[in-house]
Length: 366
Image 1 (cartoon, rainbow, N blue to C red):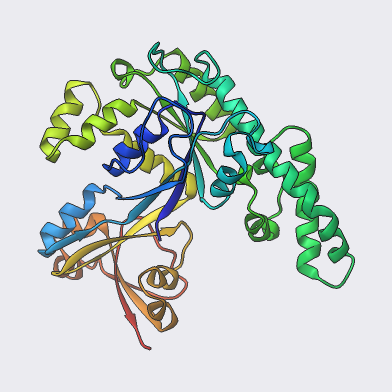
Image 2: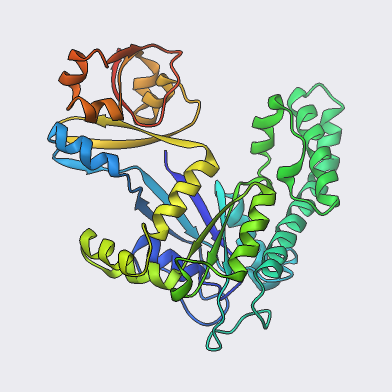
């Protein structure tokens, strides 16, 4: 399981530059005019995890296979997108298909790069996009409500649940608030997700600042950070230009040296992934052996059999138990044998909840 983020924002805020940097490709053309990205470009990157190299060294793994992270570069939305302006309807449909939204906001001044609204104001820009997404959701729920109400009057239990959810969402959207603020009961969560409201998706704000403000941020990014805090959203400050430069460097040593010279501890990609993991409630577990050290991703709260299913459905169906070692113990006691001798290997059953960094060896019977 990977995680899928749609990169959105107004035209000319740095979305495609960021996408190119994140995926280290030139697949998305970054140009100084709106709609330079007509179809959503999809790029996959390996999720960096410093634990993998340590695990692989101990096990003598021939190959490192990080878990995958997917980014979808969606063309710039404009005011009126919910009514079809600027190819809006097409792009809104692409946003519905992603797990989370990475909202890139321009937080830098540059006379050479045209701003579609004529000035730099990330709070205003965020509101423009939010309104368009809320209007798209409102239109969607208004279309679906009458039909769902008819079904709910019959014996369709699922329709009744969905109708009640839609009413809650409609009230919130009509009040000018995103669907994620609707009060959804625990037993309604699954149906709520299935209804695919754009504004129900978790959101991360990415403040794109100038190169000399990448380490410190600026007045614009401070305002967005405050907004994100109020909403319980994630926020990352990066310079897309710097990320592009980093992606062009050959070795990890070069990248580390470059980051140190500009006062950054890690690249923006790493910070975006960490925020994204937290945003979507994901965690990583490992399978380690002489052939490969493999990282896998599951949702927090996943059982051991569900983790096994992330590798292969047969593993989940025939799950017996999981030999389990924490990553910290695996490194501290120098591998599987050392952990066995120290009593740090556990046999976990079907009820065990996977913890971040678990090193698993699944026993199953098909």
